Image 1: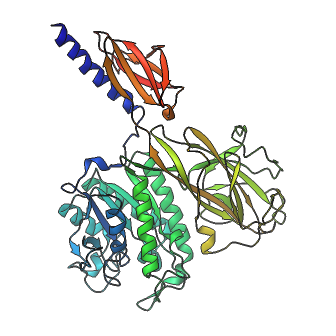
Image 2 (image 1 turned 90 degrees about the horizontal axis):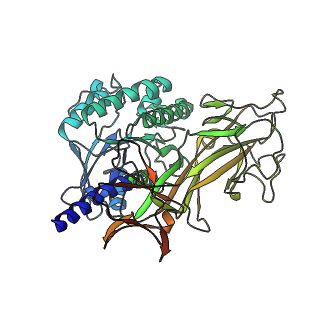
Length: 515
């Protein structure tokens, strides 16, 4: 009888540790948990888009470059769709897709000829996607669409803020458990397609991409599995397009594949590599737009910015993509040279960051700091930077809407809370525009989960020191009452592990760690 009782207690405590783990692992609200997949149950990825995804210009398009990236990184996956490219073994064998040359987002389609049995006027994704999802249920949808909508003069606000949300609603009504990565479209500078001058609407690409970023952020805030990729920033219009300036050449297709891969990594839970988006484009920043010289204290981690203003990016003034307008003073010919921005960076408890990827958009020049250390100097003279320093050159057109990437390796692995700080400098006080946004992606490794065991008459709970040696162990008789109390359990640190010891009880107990 006593033996059976002890077995029951062990079972209870095993259940209890699940509650503890939930407090330390990511929510998995909108991630792919790779351990749920295998070669017999691969991640099903559906590529949806227009001719940049279809084969009408290049067989396999960017998909042929994405397959080896995923295969070589241990992703058990397959592309799904009703259309098929020609296989090019050994690197490109997963050929299914849902790309449609000339496709737009919303009706009517703009073609005079049919594509994959769809009449030209029906080659729009709102019409096609229900058929796509009736045939296959993907785990992940890669959605790159909008070039034909914008290139043919459709209103970018309508396309991104009305047509795209309608398309997302259609996707989730047919595949409610899918994850969707929407992509900003590439540049349309000088683009000519079938005798049509797409380039005349190239400025509308900036607006469409800004609206799309806002839509994705709104959906994510509501709990939807929607993410953002930035093809505009990674495909260089000077070197990565074919002669029509619309379809990416091999370099451009490789860049698109790499961007998809980076964003897939950032939304995947694996057993080894840890990648997470620490700051999203369009996130809310604290900012100081008073035109004052803040010296060198403002970018330190312990600086008090509680009195600063705040708002979502893009922050700035002078163009239609600005989400939060900041002040430049009272004289439009003598605007403030420097504006300051700060954002907390919180590393999830389940991981440690060893590499940082900063993606900075700054018009005209910028300095980025991380925990008080300068990490980026962009379009400003070398050496110490004063608040009166002007940018080295004016930034306009495509570069003004491009996120430029800088990789940083911190001196020590990062956990806990940190501070990103950026100062943006104008090129001349009279320039009518200024803009700022930034993304921050962190890469590292997972911290082993806490472990529970029973030794004699004691329950032993172990967790890594890296996960925070300052945690306290709390207990409750159930997880719904909220009656969590500090156990004040004795703790010892040995071999990089913290061990808390509790006497074994016949009562059911649930445990959790908290600071």
